[in-house]
Image (cartoon, rainbow, N blue to C red):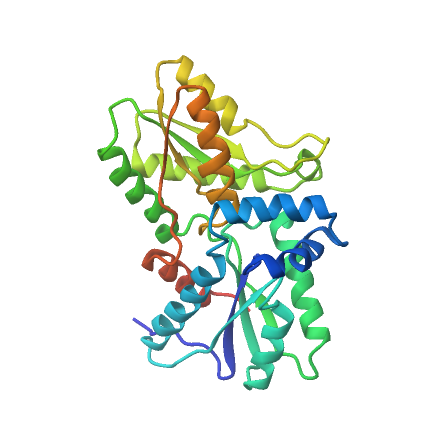
Length: 305
């Protein structure tokens, strides 16, 4: 069997969303996310949320993924430099591209740390890459590798985690497979995100085989426009009324812990569940699990330009 190889001068760029490291970062981070300086009350609200979760572990987790992936690629026989960039806040993707160029990298394989090849998710990364290349004197060529939602290591993490969690919970516990909602206008414009995440949910459920499961969306934005449904709160009440008060949330729409998991689910949804007399349980996130490292390794060596 032929060993996988990469051309000389290759590197890998992991792309994360980004998060503030502490209170001092918050106004600048929010300004990047929303595109203008945030109102003081918005800053205070997000300060409250981040303080409730002890601030985001996102940068620590994705930094660990970078180190682990570099070590995994080195075991293939030739070290490959792995860089880390985010679309909001430090380390910015543009800086990572400049760092790669300074290190002599001529071709970067860029991998967003979301498995879902949706324009809603990918477009900001594409803009970050274009901006980074424009700011670099001799930029590397960049190949964006996406769409790893059916990778067996990704599906395997969730099926194994569900087996472990269900084994310790009462019979009849329902699994709620949860993905981030998005404005319905994106679906109406042809974004395949709903089909991608529902297919992923079906594969996870088929692998784990829970007797009772459902698909939900979570974390809709605070806007007046319609967002994709079914919402996780509605599904919790529906399954409680069908005789399944114990419920296990599997946030497969995300790779690692951040605000949408630690606050939106573990605070907001958990409080709602308690009010509705629903037993809330959550599957641990993959974070920097070795299965995620293997999925990323597969993407690095995937056939393509």
